[in-house]
Length: 236
Image (cartoon, rainbow, N blue to C red):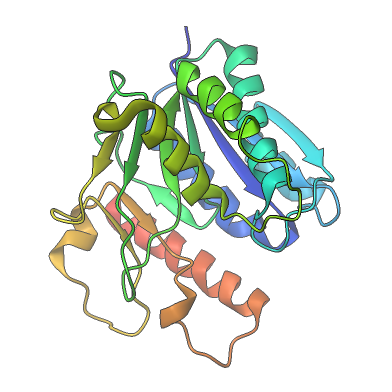
C-alpha cells in the first residue's frame, strides 16, 4: 500500500515552483504519489507538466478567486484529496503549496488525523503544508458541506479546513507550535538566515511581504522559484 499521496493546486505561473516542490516531496516521502489539480482557466503548460511527470493530472474550472478562496474552492480541494486517496489506496494526503519545499517527513504522525503548523507572522509567514488521514479528509468535507451553503462566502481555504479538523478531532490533531520552528517562510530582506531555517522540515518561498515591492506577480514567482532551487541544493 502507498502510504502518502501529495496534492498540489496550481495555475500557469506556478510551473517552476511546482516542479521544485514536487521534487522535494519525492525526496522526503518514499513512494509518494504525485497528484496535481491545475487551474483549467489558466493552466501550467503541458510541456512543464510532462517534465514533472505526476501520477495524476487534471484541470478544474472551479473559480479560485486568485487564491483558492470560497466555498467552491474548499470543496474542490477536499474532493480532490479524497478521490486521490481512494485512487491510490493511501493512508495520508498531503496538501502542499506550490511555493513550499518539504525536507523531511518527521512532522507527519500517521497516528494523527491532521498534521500541520501554527501560522507564523512576517517575516517568516508560512505557506500551507498539511497532512490529513483518509478518514479526516472525508469527515472534514462532510462537516464543511453541512455548515456552508453560500457560494459567495469568501472563505480562506486552509484556515477553514484546519478549523473543521480541530472541530472534529480537537487535541488529536498534531499542530506543531511556532517554537521550535519546524516550518518557516523565507525572509527575502535578510541575507543571513537563522540556524532554524537550515533545519526546518518545511520552508515556504512565496513570502511576498518580504519581497521587493516593485516586483510584479510573475517576477515574485520567478524569484521564489530561483531561491527555492538554490536552497534545495544547499540542503541536499
